[in-house]
Length: 275
Ligand code: ATR
Image (cartoon, rainbow, N blue to C red; front, top):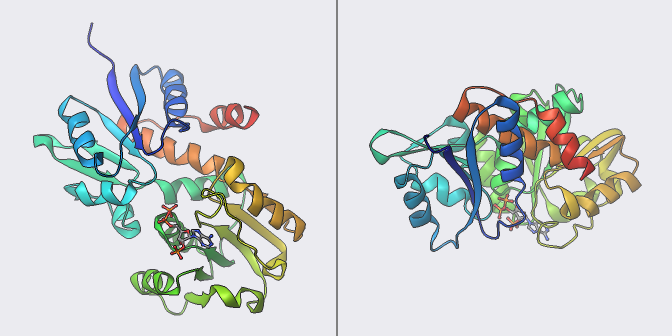
């Protein structure tokens, strides 16, 4: 009998990753035999670990913090989504030992916002907090989905400016200073793409940002999203969502790339939510 194909998620730390559970659930649902494990690699060891995994016949890898930039850098080919984000969460083997990088975070975010939560992003004034790798994916996704304006605010303003410059739509995309958040008025849609929650810190955001019918979304989930969700709720947001659905949807996009079939994400999402 042939071995089931081998998949993995690379991160550091990675023991907490839900990706093995999600991909195994998708595989079971689709009748596909695979093994999916979590591989902890330090930044120094990452490239060699990835090369070793694919040299041994690995069929695909997800990449999580802190390796998404390194995954993008080591690939031989890059999808448009990865190139726009400057980072990759999916690596796939190409003939001759080469690797392709892709980024499914933006597509996963849009699926979760629009299909799971029913959000209509067209015509919205969106505020994006953060300008790192996660924020870059989110920015492009929001623009693709038709937001009217996108205001990017980052603690380090130069990074927000660089993202806005890379997007190159000055009529739609603006940057503002973090210190000025209290003076910006309110938004329909506020996304937290900072890693403050993941790092165990808070953001101390003014409640004036939250418009009367605002939807607030944290790209993180679990304990990392609690502070932002509590702030949004206290400020009167109509909706306050965490990024658990995005996690499941970005995994489904990767699964579709590898296996040619998109799984039904809802039962997997509900099981994780319940757990
Ligand atoms: P990720 O891949 O999660 O996006 P990243 O690329 O390291 O991680 O980006 C982290 C983002 O969170 C950055 O926008 C960072 O702001 P800086 O560019 O100023 O570093 C933001 N961030 C992290 N901690 C923060 C905090 N305590 N307050 C505000 N922004 C924070």
